Length: 272
Image (cartoon, rainbow, N blue to C red; front, side, top):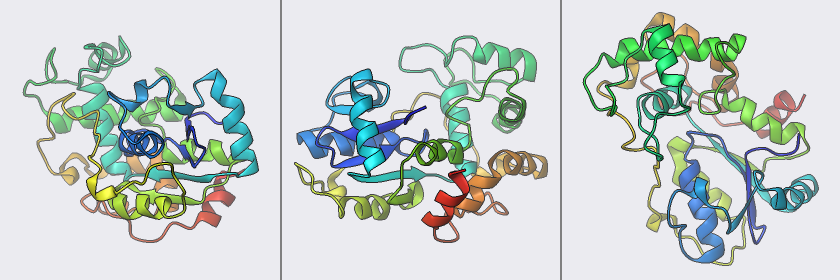
């Protein structure tokens, strides 16, 4: 299977396992800057050169050798499951994508027809009942993850632990896993272990939120979107994410972690 979703700097100073909706655009740009002294002009997901990505055939040998020999510092970043699934809804379901179209073609019309959701009209900017539509989307997300119907789960709302585990199962080892909610502390902890061609000053790095502006603004506090049933569904989908990455399931209003991530536990439980 190899190392899907893995990026590596050309200098091989660091290896990063991408977890969608967890600051991956900013991390990718930091990696690019650390090698080239400038940011990639555009969305880093569109970069076809300047860094190694598993999606490139020419990069796979380099990444495999590095990861299996643990040559470079390896890391990933995670996010509160409540805010992550909300972000996926507003970006991927309600939003218009970079190509000017809806995400995954007929996905949104299927959701409208089968689950009765609204998405804010053709441009994603109209008024609609965000809470009711999100809760219906949550049913859809659960169906895709639990039963793989009406489609396989999408990478943007499949569990973070699933993304993180492929790296371990195939022979990788994480040196650090940090939280989006404490990004500067976490990323600084990575950079302190590296010798990069260009120094990175995190205080001067902008946030590259490539999904911002794709869809409607969230109109309510996070906790308003999750009633008792919604919380039950979220726990069914993301139980391991809450436990391994130390997020607070009981309180959707608390986006911050409530304990430290135990790397040994992560490798033991996700390495089977």
